[in-house]
Image (cartoon, rainbow, N blue to C red; front, top):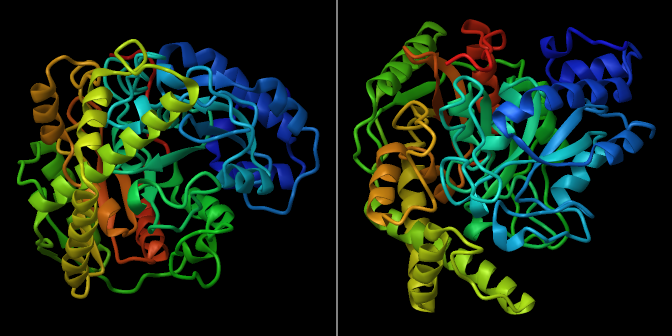
Length: 477
């Protein structure tokens, strides 16, 4: 099958089924993905590192029995792959090449995925747009003058542009859900510790960060989670055990759910009218599906939580770059780091051990307050972001005006980070487009360990308000 014109009509599970039925080979799928990448990547800058030849060798190997075997795949450039550059989106790491795979990459390989490159990310995944100095901005296929979101912006751009049906992503404050929102995709952040962080770490950002992917369908998100979930060797703690398969659970009814909705952000910042409309439509859709829906939101000391998570994040940034600089004999300055990274690291170095312990305590306290809310509700609907995708350059990690940067972050980023702190599963679904034809995601969050419930509700919504056939036209402004 030299020219598989129906490639973009299939999700990853569908492509794998074609391979399994010998209707197409994994080598042909790979060449199709590479061909599309070569065509569209110059316009969107989603893929920053290629390993096409290695992938072609992998395509010659026999495949395992897996729901996603034989499908082309991309890894976010915050994750180690043996023998391939891992820059973390930073000039500081531009020459760093790991000598091993991250455990999640090993699991992707065992599932039969064929990895052919790595995707663009902001420096160390620290912001909500993907515009690193090292590689330049990833561009949104819906409008290439707008942001893809961050920090998995390259992954989301690649999937939205049709290079592949799903791509690896990570989420420490919304970095799966926000790019999914900006690019019209499904983006699930799993329960804390559902997927492995090893072998280089026991947890990311004190448990706030976790890996999974962005995809075009609910069932792909479920199938990939089947392939990767579970603790790895030496994991400090585990997510609640799963009975059965996430993929198989997708088609089961969630029953009549108690659903709350709000567009009031924990920060108190007002959401854009497009984001409010998106929530209103989603709430009405859920009501039409037979669920009980009412306006409500969890309460907590969100100001203390914001301060706590900033201490945790900046302390981790300082530790990462200071350790690398010391080991490599490098001086840290604006020739190898962006200005906001330097400022965050400086803040992290001033945090005392007592402050860090207090931050962990504050995060756990709010987690318990929020958990009480979910005793009364199965799901909470919110906007994913406070605005539709912003123009490129609006939020600049290399700015010399940190006050403006902080103000703009607060005006854009409001609903996702709470659930990194609480560890709850949370998904952004593409249920609305703005008057300018830009995607506006809606976030659905449930209790710890209840990804299956989100997949079941997501599948209902996917059937009631299909999004798969809605595609961007690259270059249309």
